[in-house]
Amino acid sequence: MRWQSQTLDADDGALPGLERAGFVRSVQTPEFEGITFHEVLCKSALNKVPDGGSLPFGWTVNPMRGCSHACRYCFARGSHEYLDLDSGTDFDSQIVVKTNVVPILRKELHKRSWHREPVALGTNTDPYQRAEGRYRLMPGIIGALAESGTGFSILTKGTLMRRDLPLLSQAARQVPVHLAVSIAILDPELHKAVESGTPSPRARLELVRALADAGFAVNVMVAPVIPYLTDSKAHLAELFGEIAAAGAAGVTAFPMHLRGSTRGWFIEWLAEAHPSLLRRYRQLYGRGASVTPEYSAWLRGRIEPLLEKHRLNRDRPAEPEVRAAESYTPDPQLALFA
Image (cartoon, rainbow, N blue to C red):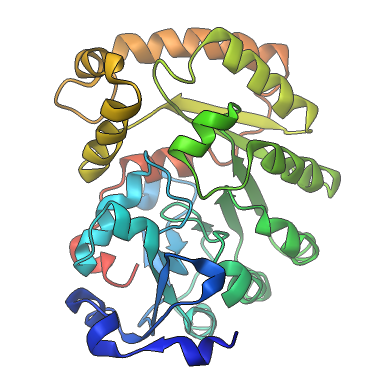
């Protein structure tokens, strides 16, 4: 079915905050049941990272806002509120797509003021979520960055990255390219419960293998580790073994953060699915977003032997990027166009 025939009237399909982000139209299609795409024209594609001097990149590109991966623990949920959309169901189902991101990016990369600093993708919402199969923004983004001499990194849970493997290989001959895949859960039932819109863990392991076979030193994010659900010795041992067998070069793992509105959205699910854990979570997180230092130290003690055993502590290029994303609180004004 042609998407042109699925256009909604702007008065019915758009919320007030979207007007500030360059709203053009809203689109629904049977291929994406329950999801509305809000197409916008962005004013800029490159986003400056505050205090970026301590990171391996100072800029990001986010072709979409919101994410159909629907991960209960996603740290970026709060950014949807800047568009007058809620951080729960709306974040999963109201996806903002910057349809002009490629020409805007090319224009910015050709400015004399651009110094070819590294650019990161996937630090907010996933550029390879399902909608990328329809909008095909990433090939243009990859090409624009490579042609301008700008190195970049991509973090994803989306197996659509495999489609662009020839482009990524070509880009890697021109600029530094770092690729990372997020795989935090092996259990099929838990995967379905907390990251229902993502490809299966097995499919992502196959993506790691394909990227490694193409010559990339792939980093895998075992992140977040969900306390009392994915931190068991058995689960981590199996997961690290599978990751090593897939050919990954390194692993980064850290415990789940529950910042802002993400906390309420995750705890709501926890209360329904695992009510016996609520008291332990209150003790572990208190009123903050992070686990206690004692838990962090305990988890490191469990993970480090696995890194050594499987030789997964060699190259971990995406570690600073993910930590930055977990700790970064976006500026409300920048968030409108991020």
